[in-house]
Length: 288
Image 1 (cartoon, helix red, strand yellow):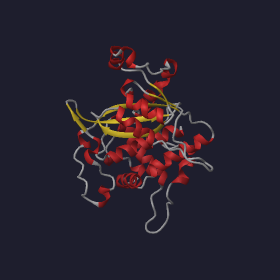
Image 2: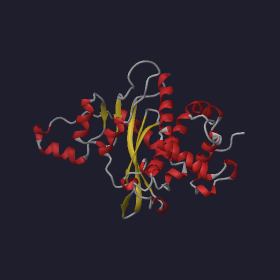
Image 3: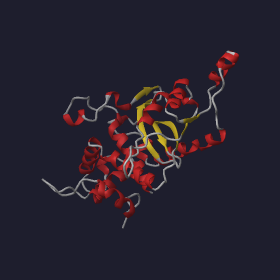
Image 4: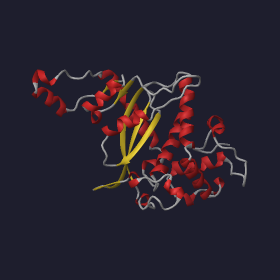
């Protein structure tokens, strides 16, 4: 019997072939499905690892599996494969939306050991660990790109005070959907929809060079600057107000991700672990 918030049989059938073998040299691994359900319980409740119910096994086993598969990229490979399967049957909608959201970081998220402490830490440690300090306290900003149905494709983390616009191109560079047959992975969406925070001449120029249609309203200061220059200010960029209404899918995706309490507030000390948790939640949304 599947418990609340646990992997369904259908979801497990999709991801089981993508996981390492349970048996092999050395000790036999604890059942993968049980361990992933333990991680999902943590994501759903936001409780400390030590409070993990006994039915999921030792909490250290679940945490170690999260660490190990974060380090070797297993979570991202699963998400990539799930997206590939959907794209192969034509479900992925390549009109994508981009936005960001700031999440408060709990005081437990601070104090990660510095890079270089151990070899396992060196592999995942980053300067600052994606934490920003402001008058409101510690925070992290999630930069998210979703496809046309509002399903997450890529996530980038920055400190909470970081700007939105500089992360747009890195987000697009992270899109890489492989083909089930021969051919290069698809990397270029048909349309990118974003709010005024991304409306910058350099961004519009970069997307024109990539032959990607960009739908974003101009900021008031940009409109005023062009008006002040008269005919020398150039023509206003094209803006499809009807298509722009579809941008709400990225806001709805943030709402769905934050139903996982461990994501609505950041508790993880390592940015890599928090990003892995976001990736796991994204996998669950794709498999629903």
